[in-house]
Image 1 (tube, one colour):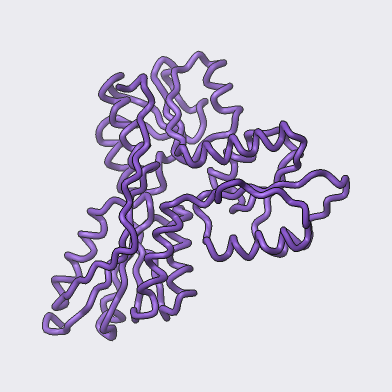
Image 2 (cartoon, one colour; image 1 turned 180 degrees about the horizontal axis):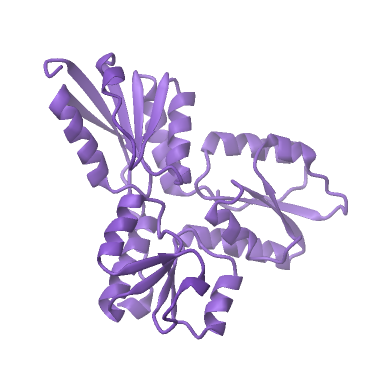
Amino acid sequence: MKDKELKILLAAPRGFCAGVDRAIEIVKKSIDKYGAPVYVRHEIVHNKYVVESLKKIGAIFVEELNEIKDKSRPVIFSAHGVPKVVPAEAEDLKMDYIDATCPLVSKVHREAENLNKNGFHVLLIGHRNHPEVIGTMGQIPYGSIDLIENIDDVKKFKNEENKKLAFVTQTTLSVDDTKDIINALKEKFKEIKEPKKEDICYATTNRQAAVKKIAKQCDMFFVIGSRNSSNSVRLVEVANKSGCAEAILIHSESSIPLEKITKCKTIGISSGASAPEILVENFIEKLKKEFKVNIEEVEIIKEDITFKIPGKLN
């Protein structure tokens, strides 16, 4: 198989975004400052490799604060954001906490709060049970926000009390699918208020656009990322919808489908915003052992966004 030529189109941008970089840095700097262990509520970002590497240096991951045995140790809230009850609970327990919520998620939280204060009923476009959705819905009182997952939900939603309506969105959705849902909302509720600036984040938008650009040219497409990573799963969907016959998520337990790749002339590769570049490099190295590989990186835009670390960690 080693003489078989294989062209790899490498989507760029791919991998870590500014929010993920910041969240991982917050965990590392917290361990430097406070020593180990430092607790993290929920996976800091949705990637097993990242979580395992942080465990090795002293991070302990929990789902709820009541699992933390030593309440004198600091706790970090994940990049996805948390409902308001979580920092309130930490304060009740007199715990020191550091919020690693991505600033672009925090922006959606503030939007929801402001809309609520101004008498709007909020519709959140997102995926049920995703931590980011749970966090956003938990910013304002129960009953003042409803989740819209798809166009069917738009059809079913009734504004019985004739409230002023507004929508916000999860930051890691499919740009195209969300556009369809927004159009359906605007069609049904002519006066609905929309965010001044789109809520889907720059990294999600850029990674999807990069996949779209090359998907048609690929016989197969591989997205490196975790199964619980919303933006990684969306990239697989985008590759499929953009003309690639088969798109696959490569996660920590995946085996590489070499037999299928043997039948390909060109494959595409990208990675989710929480997947480190080393996982892409490892994947390509495995392919190099089996094929004569020719790599072309296709970059659609340069990213230079960074987010500041909380002052108390500097």
